[in-house]
Length: 389
Image (tube, rainbow, N blue to C red):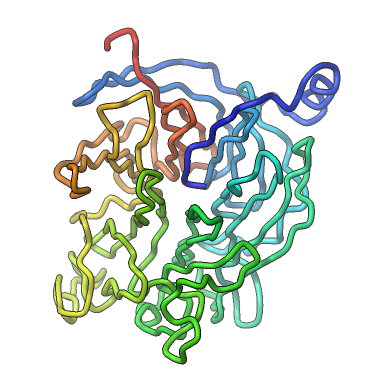
């Protein structure tokens, strides 16, 4: 889940913990080499917490300080003390086609008590595959998912392997926002009776949320929050004020940061910055009445993989800024915001130093956690350098 986690406590102790760690954790491990990097507002240090991950997609911090990581091929693992666990059993079967696979993880707000979590993934069905959401309970020993149940599957499946979207953001009432891309068929983003190209909003049991704009009408599907999105792979809620923010892939230019609002249309594929891959311009240009403009855009594209809102103690200079992971340009973008929330500047960090950055979250201590998108992927921790600060 795109939020900070507090109340850390160690649930593994004594002899039971020793047996558990010996049986479940493999020796995949990266020495804690620390690299220093300058930045505009603070000196940064980066350490590798673990390597040997297979195309990791999402990371969450567990209450005991471990890290729960999804791998696109269909496995969940726990990283603890530099070691990577054996695969957790009970994960839903995933359709690993193109960009599809096991994607985001979100911990329920009461995870420390309930052990409930949510997963997004590509699931098979009639006509091909599509984005699905499952709810499950992580066993007390962390080795398996229990009571796993699919609570959502998009309504039109296709054999295509692109644009599954999939980040989850959990609201204060425990409901789930998540994104689905256009599945490589742009016109679907403009169809209110199609889950593709949308931000969706459901309750923990998968039912449509009461605040959704089409609930109880014949104008669109009840789960839809907003439409006109190309491929929203980043989604976060600002813990200070509840603002929903998305980071979305454009075509040749036009990657966007948006503030999805109920019933609003964000333009794809009619309105966008940049151009189509063919070089053609968009039908309605970069802006048109009835379509919401982005808060920020990139041209050329950086390929944003995730977004976080910085609310943490380690970097008070970043308070309220947006942190965006980038795949194509292999960097982390810090978007500085003013008191009104408007984006006023961009700083690019770690350009090309670690490869494609898939995920970014703010850890409980205010450090950043990054995942690199590689067959030998790594979990990185960005913290304040004391050597040069």
